[in-house]
Amino acid sequence: MKRAAMVLGMLAVTALVAAQQQQAPTQQKQPAGAASTTQQGAAAPAPPQGKRPPQAKTQPEFEAYNAAIANQKDPAAMDKSADDFATKFPDSELRVLLYKAAMRGYQNANNGDKMLETAQKLLKLDPDDPEALIASAEVIAERTRDTDLDKDQRFAQATKDAQRALETIDTDVPIPANTSQSQVDAYKGLLRSSAYSILGTIQYDQEKYAAAQDYFQKSIDAYPSQPDPVVVLRLALALDKQGKYPEALKEANRAVELTQDGTSAGTTARHERDRLVQLTGGATPGSNNPAPASKPPTGAAPNATPPAPH
Image: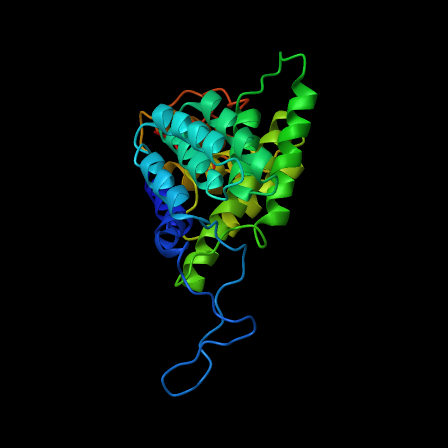
């Protein structure tokens, strides 16, 4: 839950774009090549690099955007408002912001089907948007089953989206004015962590455990200040599948520390820890050789981040 809260905080980096639009139609543009200076005449620090934030071109467009974004607490209403706005202003850059608000709303409501649908709408407008690519990849990966006839195609699409997101994170995240480099770095780190987690999940489901281990470790390393408990647990399971029991036990213990007993991830983490304690010759805290988990627990609908335990 802490990580999910951090996601929302990081998403505020891009949500701040909306505040910039209020003056966009009338704002004077600085001449190209002009440098900002401090009162002493020294050049100001260079702003973080990224895509230019979307802007309104006219006052009516901006007013319609404001009316539409007011529905962001209701994802279905937000989705409809985005469609209506896109119909009225088919060339507006602000369409991306509205569909992203709808996508996040469905995400917070754990409605993966609608989240995927709005992510696809967003990707038609901006095929390189890393947040939409990650959202699409995660829903597809988490909802693909071994019995699906199109399993390979679904995994291939999710892999393509996640890998594309890793390529566009540095170039296609809109950076609002006055956003600190530390905020940008944290948000990009979270996106990378999410993409690596998805790739690890796909590799695990395909029984490619060494590759899964590598991706799960990259996911943790990309956002080390707040590791996702499910990713830590999945790393333990990937190590277990390779017979690396001491390393797996270390990660399982960490997953236990990060989860609450009684949750899906917490229960699986404790069963995995108990099993590994037995395999490595330690004492078992209250279990009778629990069976290994053959598949990591499935998390909630993505938060533009790996699924977190409830």
